Amino acid sequence: MTEAAKPESERRKFRAIKGTRDILPPDSALWNWFEKTARSVMESFNFGEIRTPIFEETELFARAIGADTDVVAKEVFTLQARPESVQRAELLREAIHRIGDVKHELRVTRLLQHLTVFVRYLQIALQQGHLPKDAANLHNVGLLERGLKEAGQLWKSGSTQPESYWNGLFEKVKRIADDIRFESAERTSGVSELDLEPTASLRPEATASVVRAYVEHRLDTRPGDQKLYYIGPMFRRERPQKGRYRQFYQIGAEVLGTSDAPAIDAELIEMLTVLLERCQIEKYTLLINSIGCADCRPKYVELLRAELRKPEIFERLGADSKRRVETNPLRVMDSKLPEEQEIIDTKLPKISEHLCADCKTHYEKLKKELRLRAVPFTESPRLVRGLDYYMRTTFEITSPILGAQNALCGGGRYDGLVELLGGPKGIKGIGFALGEDRFIDAIQEARLGEQATKIHAVRPVDVFVAWMGERAYPTAVRLARVLRGEKHAVELPPEELKFRKALERADKMGARYVLIIGDDEIASGQLTVKRLADGKQEKIAEEAVVDYFRGAR
Ligand code: AMP
Image (tube, rainbow, N blue to C red):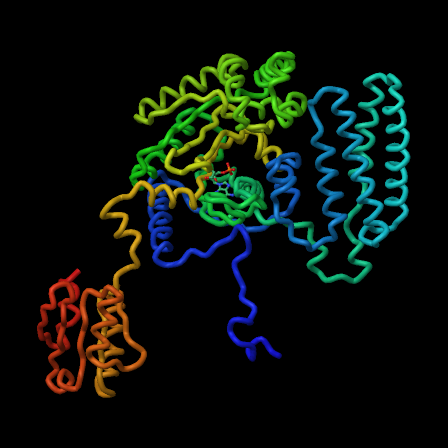
């Protein structure tokens, strides 16, 4: 039986995919109002809109956000244009490149772990014909297999090789891994054009795309700082819950240029507070911090690590933090685990007390600039970012009216990112992204009273054209067009309605006026207008309709 022939209860119904949702009227009116307000605020600070694609090369995100972060490792939706084995192998190659400054033994274990999986995926890809079986690839995969076996045995046997041995091995693995060629396998097997593209992923955020576009279009050659904003959907495979979706919307802004003046940071934050004010969200906290730079942060990280290793502290940490003590101790600072809160707040050194002179000055100036702009802030030593190119200013805006997912917005300085993505040296950057879904919740929670209902409601139908009889219809169509041209919202019933029915429908729709056109009206050239608020009715000449409704705004 075809679907259509089945009774309705048995027909397959489709639902939006988990973690995605529809935004319907009247809610969409509030979304539009918010976007319009955000645009107008950002344009008043001289930001221009940038629109980038919603999918990009997977490697762009791996590089910009970090192959080891949750976002890239677990949450990115990768378009399956290439076989999974090849995608995984590529991600692992990037991950191997990123094994950096961790304790020696950990680095070796990591390398061996990543290499084991890397080699496994390469073998699968070769077997399934997804990797060109040419001499170079076979040779290189062979080298990696042998190297892995040898190194694994050495490591297991506990033999004490000097650090230089492992460094040498590390460099060699990276070189060989880079020489593996993923392309052209499909070319020979005749798969479609699309499969020849590098793997693409849906964007989990937009900074990587904005910086990619900045570099690609040489925006550094345009005069002055580039102040760009974007609005659009982002995609992350997270566990859906209130305030956390798999397709969600962000509005963000980035400033890219040669200056890192604290006034840039302060103005960006000020812009956010102006937006909050326009939305009448009063209950929020702006948290700020400085996470130092390539000079001072490594020393602080060592200090933090040493502190975290102390048994009286280490034993009180959860499993994730225990692991991070070695891999990325900074991230212990933003742990949400309840039993770690007291340690973090009272026992651990604060980065703000270990900044170098330049970073300290930058941070002090930022605070001064914020005070100058009457932007209240709270310093939070816990606001950190795990990636190397983040530096100095970080900030977050939270709101207690949001519940568990209380972050409205996050941002920070990323002075090394342009260079990391192949751009010119010396270009600095700072930006933020705010969660539109959460702003909308906050606006609704903040209850703007009268105004909220106004924003929230569907745009009222200004004029309901109640036409009756064939002779009235052409006039009704023409007047609807003219009034719509005047920017009134006009409802023109597609089928003739009895007078009473028309009034009822107009009333239900919340129309302000009913324009009545029947045989009498056509004959006399005098139309009837009924104001629904008080039932007042009057006659107006057909030629006077436009002026009448202009005056009725
Ligand atoms: P991030 O890019 O993770 O710094 O996030 C910036 C802002 O986007 C957060 O402060 C949230 O308001 C919002 N956000 C992040 N992830 C989600 C999600 N899965 N669903 C809804 N909003 C999100």
